Length: 456
Ligand code: ARG
Image 1 (cartoon, protein in one colour):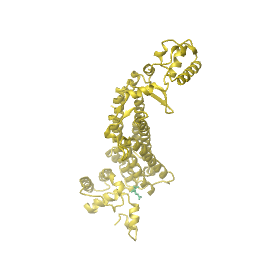
Image 2: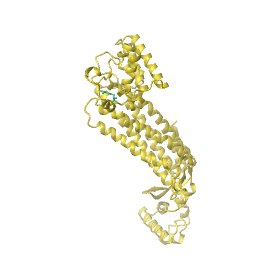
Image 3: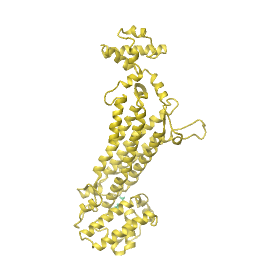
């Protein structure tokens, strides 16, 4: 029998019941639902809307229900409409008449808005820890590769020499911003909606601030219509998760390239790679490919939420029940990806020699060759043109700027001297970029120190 059966002359069709039901995916909010109900009942008792003895009985029984769900003694009823109805029905089954007083001055609309906020706020904490761990691993690996020269790329063409540490610390910056975005999200989401009722609040003299304090929210929602119909907090979280995934996906794409035979900059640990069913030689970077793939799925969750909300009139509409699967999926997926990616990153082997060898091919010191002439007084555009001509000559003769003889340099400009070879030395090119934000070992050490400070 439905709690709302009073107005109906027939039982709901069983297919409709299944279609309508959300317990299969909202039961994971049971702890938040019960904590919210305990805070609500305590407040009802404190302000005298129900008897203190009734409030005590309700709270005690809710604690028992929580314990029984946790121990497995109370399985969720798949026939229940949702977790809110399930807990309330169980309370009434155990307590009788008193249980029926819990829902005074409350609606499932403000209840679900509360539960979902609480659930997401509770579980986004793990995300924060994972991001910190990832950033920490990036700092650790970077620390070992401050002098590991590799080619930096634009257009996936070798461009200028950098270090592997510098490349890794670029990702650390992205994940630091992701972490900060989550902190901002937490601030904007810490609004307690209970008391909004179905849409128009309530005539009972409830104490919303007491409930807020009990549930550790920063504020109460300011408008009851907004309190029950806002799902910005889901959308914003999905958007923050999409950015995390986008960063992980770019990184994954690079790792996929780096462990190909074409690059061989890194080797994944055997525990974090997979083989082929037919090709005995294969070692595939499946984890990173899956992360790249799952990024699309999290974007999909974000689109689901945005599209679901875009045409909804105020206030609550049942469409909004679709919020949970999308935001839970985005959260679960991002956590799963982070927790798999971190140990993979930690255990990979860096092939310094291959990075150095790649840096030696592709004329990535050409800018430094031009800068050499500029430092001797030539205008940059002229220096640029001369260096381009030198590169073309090297390509024709199968040489590099390092192996091209000084006489060839001097044919184009007598500003060239023996010291040009030092100026185009790859290590020097990378290590002389000492400005803040540059790849020089000391600059990267500063990045690492600043970053470590932020994740302490
Ligand atoms: N299961 C519902 C949801 O997730 C709870 C709110 C139901 N409210 C209602 N008026 N039918 O949105």
